[in-house]
Amino acid sequence: MIILKNATYIDWESLEFSKTNILVDEGIDSKISLISDAELEKYKNSEIVDCSGKLVTKSFGVGHHHVYSSLARGMGAPKKSPKDFQEILKYIWWTLDKCLNEEMIKYSALTTAIACAKAGSTFVIDHHASPFAVNNSLEIIAKAFDQIGVSHLLCYEISDRDGKDIADKGFEETATYLQTNQGLVGLHASFTVGKETLQQAVTLMNRFKSGIHIHVAEDLSDQNHCLKTYGKNVVNRLFENGVLDSSKTILGHCLHLEDEERGLIRNSPAWVVQNMESNLNNKVGYFSAKDLGNNIMLGTDGMHSDMLQSAKFAFFAGQNTDLIDYKTAYERFRNVHRYLNVNEFKGDGENNLVVLDYKSPTPINKDNFFGHFLFGFNSSIITDVISDGKLIVKNRLVQTVDEDVILEESRKVTQKLWEKMQG
Image 1: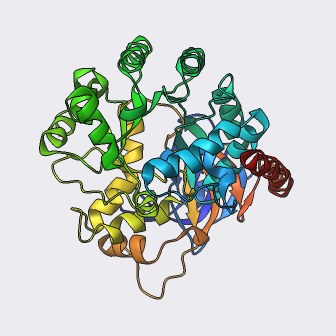
Image 2: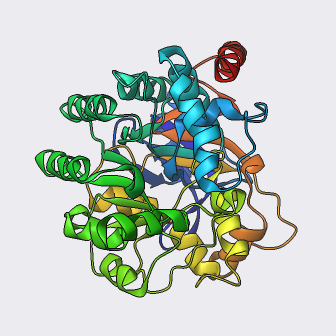
Image 3: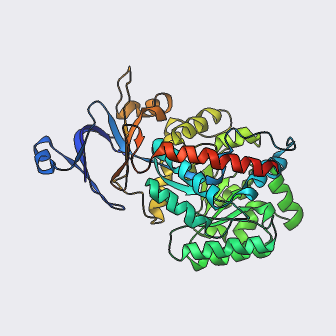
C-alpha cells in the first residue's frame, strides 16, 4: 500500500477539499482511506509520497482514443494532398493502418499508454484498426497497457472497406478477445459498414452483453451516404438495428445530426464522446450538445493523450456553438468515470489518483475550482500517478518500464512504418 502524506485531497465529485493523509490500497477497484497524522505510525513500512503543498484527486480517463495513430507524429505528407475528410481517411489514416504489423501495434500501444499515464489518465477506451494485422491485435494492445499499468476498454474497428474477409477477421478477433476480457464491439462508421456487418455486430454485442463503439456523423458525408443508401439518417439506422439499446454503446463525434437523431440519443442509454481538437483539425464542424442529454464524455481521437488539454479545447472552441460552461466542461471531463461505473467495468476504482504540484498565485477552493481547472491546470503539474493502487509515475518518471528504451525502439519501428507507407 501507499501513503500520500500531507496532501490536500479534492473529492472529484463533491469538490470538497481536505488536508489529510491518504492510505491507498493496492488491487483492482480497491479503496482509499483518509487517515490522521496519529495513524501514520501504523503504516511506516508502506511507500510514502510526501504531498506537502500538492493537490491529490482522482486520475483521469480517455473516452475515445486511437492507439494506431501514435506513430504518425511528424510523418511526411501523403502521396496526394487530401481535399476533404474522405480523402484524409483514404490517403492518411487508411494508408497508415494498412501498413501496421504486430511490432508497430505493440509500440503504438506502449507509447500511447506511457503518454496517457504521464498526462494523468489511468483508464483508456480505445478504437483500434490494423486491417492486415487483425489477429491478436487487441491482446497486443492489452498487454502493452498492462505493462505500463493503465486500465483499458478495447475494441477492433470492424469495417467493410477492406472486404468481407477482413471484416470477418475483425469479428473473430472481437469474439476471441471478449471471451476473456472486458471490451466493446467496434465499428468504423455507417458509410463503411454494410447491412449484414451492422446486424452481425449487434448480434455479437448482445451475445457478450457489450456495446458498440462507432464514429457517428463525424463528417456530413456520413449522413449523405446513409440517406442515399438506406433512405434514413445515421442515428435512425443505428437505432433501428439496436445499437442504441446498450448503455455500453459509445457514439463518437455526433456533429451533423438532425433533431430527431438527437432525440433518439437523448432517450437512449447510449453515450456520446466529443473530440473537439480532431474535429477542428479535420475541418468537419463543431460539436453541440443541444438536446443530446447528459451522457457526454470527452476523448482525444488519437490526437494526443492529454485530457486536460481536451477539456480546455471543448470549453473554448464551444463558446459560440455549444451549450458548455465551466461546470459542464468539468462534468464532461469526468463523465468517463460515470460511464465505466454504470456499466460495471473494472479498473477505475477509488485507488486511481493523480498528484498535482499546482503553484497558484490565487487561492483555490471548492467555490472557484472550475476556474483553476480550466485556466490553471495542465499536464505539466502532474508529478505522480497511481493506478489500481500502484505508483506508475513518480516524480514525473514512469516506474513500470524504461521509457527511454521504449521510445528509442519506437523511433526505429516508426521509420519502418513510414518507409512502408511510401512504398
